[in-house]
Image 1 (cartoon, rainbow, N blue to C red):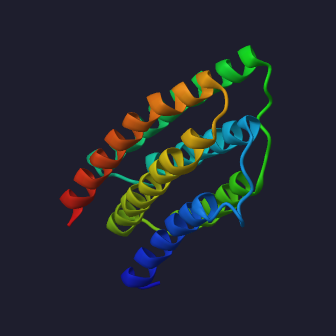
Image 2 (spheres, rainbow, N blue to C red):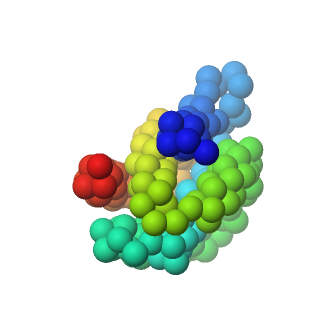
Length: 178
């Protein structure tokens, strides 16, 4: 696959996540707190999965460091979310958004596994930039505004700056690969 097509594929994945979570209220049902919890957990699990692939496929110190940070930080967010839903007695509920995110992640994982060397590093970090932009947009535009429980909303608001820091880190690594 050419570099332009691969770059487009990762942008399409991000656009897909963005559109599935930011479509008009008429076409996207309002998410309940259990559905928001599911989306949050899936988004974090996806990035842990991407990081795991990077840790196995890359030799680049910057990529490996970034992947380690993603795995550690996103696991911490999942741990906080799990503790919150247990305390609230809420079970995350699968929904169209979380299912779409899982399907998109499976495609991305499959694509990443076919690459090696510099091509892998570029594909991984390009995906991370696009993915974090899409997730930030979803958190700010859909998840926080729709969260009904104050503690869930507070957790999402706490995670938002972390996601922005991840995006800045990813963009810095991305620019160093050029």
